[in-house]
Amino acid sequence: MGAPTILINNAGLLASHTILTTSDAYLRKIFDVNVLSNWYTTKAFLPDMLRHNKGHIVTIASTASFIGVAGLADYTATKAAILSFHEGMFLVPSRTCSMLTHDSAHPGTQAPLQQPERAHYFHTP
Image (cartoon, rainbow, N blue to C red; front, side, top):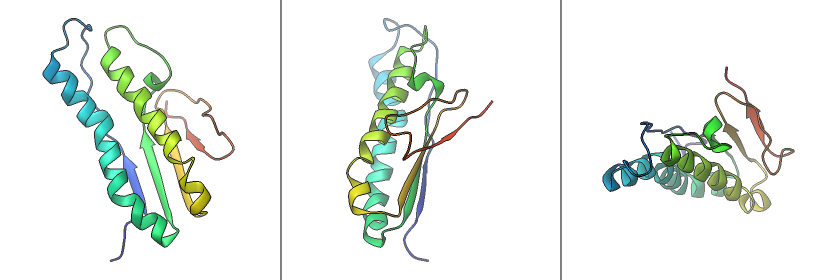
C-alpha cells in the first residue's frame, strides 16, 4: 500500500468548568488528547512524507484557537497550542519538501495565520 500521504489531526475533548474546578487528571487528559495526539501522529507520519517529498497534513483546531472562552480555559489553551504547533511545524519542512502541504481548519471562523500565502483555510458554519 505504501506510506500514507494524508494525515488529518482531529481530536478534541471539551467540558465546561473553571480553572479552579478542573482536576489535575482531566487537565492531563485534555492536553494528551487535544495536543499531544497531534504531536505523536505527526511525528509518526512526517518522516515518510518528507522522504517521499509528498504529503498533506490537516489540523482541525477551533475558533477557540484565537480567543479565550469563559469556562473553557483548558480547551482554548489546547487549541491555541495545536495552532502554534501546526504553524511552527511548517517553517522548517517547507524548505526541504516542496510537495508537503498543509491546512488548518478552525470551525466557526475564518482567520489568517502567520503565513497566509502558504496556508489554506476552511470556514465551517
